Length: 165
Image 1 (cartoon, one colour):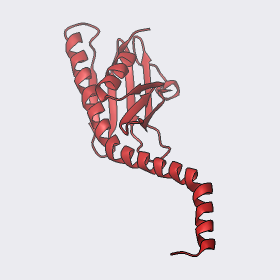
Image 2 (cartoon, rainbow, N blue to C red):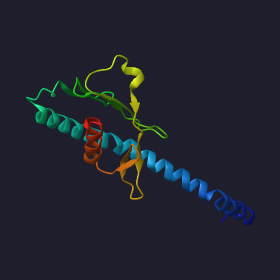
Image 3 (cartoon, rainbow, N blue to C red):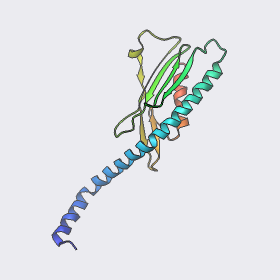
Image 4 (spheres, rainbow, N blue to C red):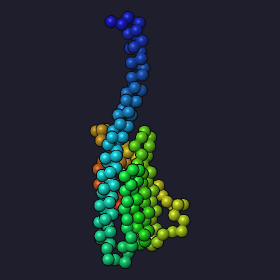
């Protein structure tokens, strides 16, 4: 058994630094969950975006407003791109970030009816990041809203991109 003075020191350390140590441990657990579950969530999110983009293409098929609608997913970088050539013109891209204090890079441009001259200056960021719920489930915090299910986040995003203002 430790000497009394060592017990006192240990007790003081536990009392003073316990809360900070708990917060650090919780942050580490959240980061591990995001690193493990984030890529799974992102891939499912991409699959739903692809599905909804293809459904939108089918719904517009044969109409003069259809233009060209494309979806791409780059497996190495996990970047998502959605493009509609006109009526309205839509350009969207997103790349995930899974590390501590990293956000998802997400930006879009939507103009009606056609592509503007200077695309880069008009791109708008969409705030997005992975978070962990109190139930230890990874979700996407997208545009100020919480999406625990990837299909709901994808639906929200497709509606945002294709809704005419």
